[in-house]
Image 1 (tube, rainbow, N blue to C red):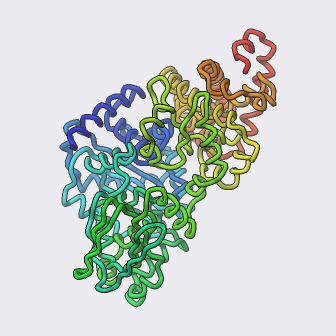
Image 2 (image 1 turned 90 degrees about the horizontal axis):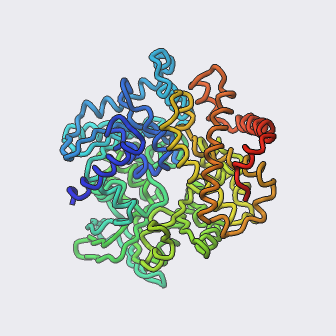
Image 3 (image 1 turned 45 degrees about the vertical axis):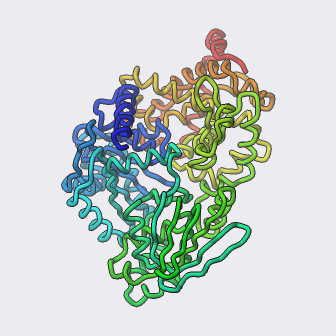
Length: 577
């Protein structure tokens, strides 16, 4: 029931607003949305909603998603009773918010440093041909005016480079997002799909039953219209922007060509659907699907939804429907996606080193569940959940969170903050060498937990706007990096080689890391202020965007240590490992 979800959402919004001392409940809603829908770590989500405020140009959420090569710009409208009706004018205002982001100097004259920083990041992203996703989020119902405007905008702009897309996120969609994140629903319950007459071929094998068929494009468009991105809940990625030279640009060009769209079936690789079961009605050329998901073909499906109506009517698509046991579904997802360009973060979930870490983290003492892919938690049995539960909570480490913490811990905080994709590609061997000890990975992650807790405390105490900016903009990762420097200074450069599992996971270590986080936060702010000089927030935004700033940060921390090491009481305050 939506009423049950609304009760839950209201409690979440109130808790977030109180926890982060946010002025408006709408900002808390967008932080929740950034965390649940965009899947941002809470500190990053807080940064993403920091543009909200007086004269915010309608931008309540701003985030550059490098992994999916897109800029996400959101506007939120919150009503506790869930009765907010979407407004066409508000959607148009959100769409035109990027007109402001194109004019950095105008924002600078208005004295909005957060928007100036967003503007500079936006222009950098657009220069890379990133797409732009506008998310209009509201606790209520869609209206025909707003829905029609979103559909019109998407059809008009899908051919643009970079692509722009508007999404209405109503209360029902918010609930769907929450259900998916909670593991309540990872597939669509049921649907009926029309097939091209006599163009289907049943197949069977060790994997189970399958059906290869030609499907009118309009059928896929209808499924997407009804279910949205929930249709791709088991896919490794959602829709990517239509970039020049990219696969989606090729799909778009074929669909827009009156001469070529009839060849779409021959040009396209088709889509793959996994399901619990299906029933083929040969006489009527329809198939009933039960508990299904599109695991390969998101780009094709969304491109069809954005295509001209005539293309939707004329194009046909090759579809494979596979009814396979759950134990084989993961392999179907992996192998069907590994044959097309999929980003390193998604494929690294199948990397042997990641699986080895998963196995080691699950070992005693103090086991952790290392979650490599979204939705894994729903597969845990009650017995398994009990194994990973301590002090009343499930001990879970998310893959992206570990990778970022480990990146910062190993000296790549700026990459971890601004270019996470490189942690999975050019920096991967440095972060996950063959001799990486699970103890180091656990310590780095727990340092991230301690840093996040300290940042939360410090934000309530700082009054300087520059300090507040530094804490919000990747502060957790930079503090982790400084903690790593302090740990080496205090314990010797080889302390990690002798660190034991019980020490890395103990409550005593959590207390010790909290002390390091407190000192590291103070030193990070001190060093950063020195690096920024008189440049203020704008210079800080520039400094935080490049790994080239790291040597200067490290020198500042090393110099500070050399000064303070002569104070025995100061050094003794940092416990040894």
